[in-house]
Length: 195
Image (cartoon, rainbow, N blue to C red; front, side, top):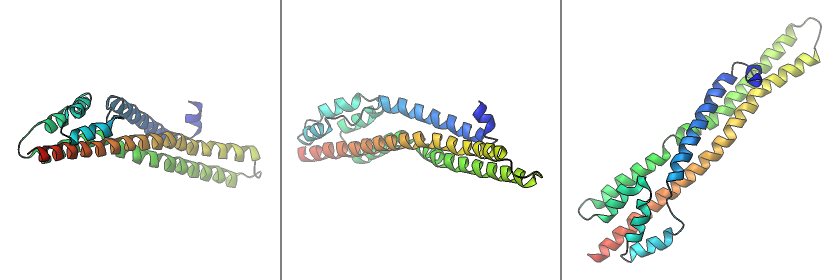
C-alpha cells in the first residue's frame, strides 16, 4: 500500500488494470483447464476417422462440454452439415478467444501508463527543483526520481505476465481451431467416401 501511495495518482488506474488482468487470466485458466482438446492422440484419432471409424474421435470430443454440440453435428447426417459444423466451430473458437483482445490491450497499455506516470513524476520533481532557491538538493532529486520510477515498474509487472498468458491462451485457441477444422474435414471426407 505504501508503494501505491508513493507512486502518485497514476498508480490507481494501474491498480485497476492489474485487477482486471488478474481476473481475465484466472477466468481463462479455468476455461482452458476444462477444455482438453486437442488430445495428444489427435493424429491417430483423425486417421481412424478418415478410415470411417469416427467413434473414438467423437468420444474424445464429448469429454469436453463445449464440444458436445460439435461432436453431435459430426455424428449427424443430412444437408447443411458442413455449414453447421463451420458455424458451431466458429462459436467454440469465439468462446475460447473471449476477453483475449482485452487482455492484449491491457498488456500493452500498462507499461505506457507506467511510463506516463514516470514522465509526469519527473516533470513534477524537476519543477520543484527549478523553484528551489537554495540549489539542488540531491536527496530531493533522488527521492523524486525513485518515486517516479515506481509507476514504470508497476506497468511492467502487469504487462509481463499478461503477455505471457496471452501467448499461452492464443496458442491453445489456435491449436483447438486447427483441430476442429481437421476433425470436420476427416469426418466429412469419410462420409463422402462412404456414399
